[in-house]
Length: 87
Image (cartoon, rainbow, N blue to C red; front, side):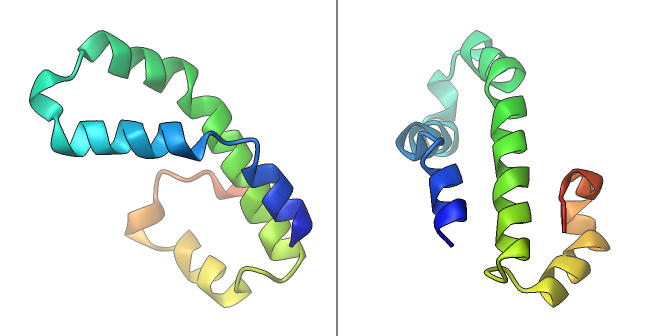
């Protein structure tokens, strides 16, 4: 559990939440260059960190293995590279 929490502290959750709120609630005033830059620079390391968090959660039995297996075949998660998650 502590390993998972330590990985989450790497994330600037406040900035992530702020970006999400801006996209959802103020989409008319978005700067497409800022969004493109975030997609190019910020999302790849975020995805890597989330893969680490999921791996740690599965190893430490924090996340349910059955739910994880169901997720692997779900259309909702088709863009996730499950091979990057160590079980």
